[in-house]
Image 1 (cartoon, rainbow, N blue to C red):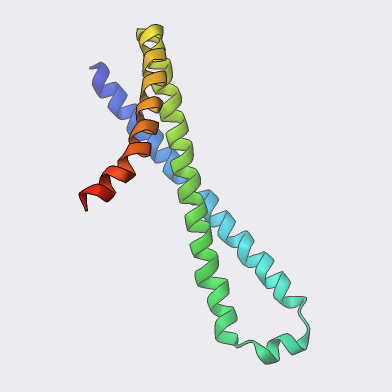
Image 2: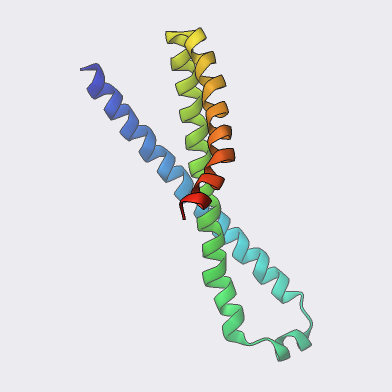
Length: 126
């Protein structure tokens, strides 16, 4: 029954996180469009003679949406990974502090060694 409660809580918190970032993404998109529009209103008339209307419309719709989507996605993933790392670290420390220290020392060491010697080994294998 504890596992079912954990699964339900995970679903609820994931839904709340998703809703929050959708809301923040929408607000960011609106703010970007407003700032772009205000910037366009401050331009001189000569700017509009050289710049096509379709290009400006495209910037206001597609580019602003792409920027806000990427920012919210990256922030969402970053925060999720931070929370997962912190909870994993707390869980590991509650089980065994010594084993946690061994893991945090050995894993980065092995990763550095693998990166250092992996590239030359790949080059030799080609």
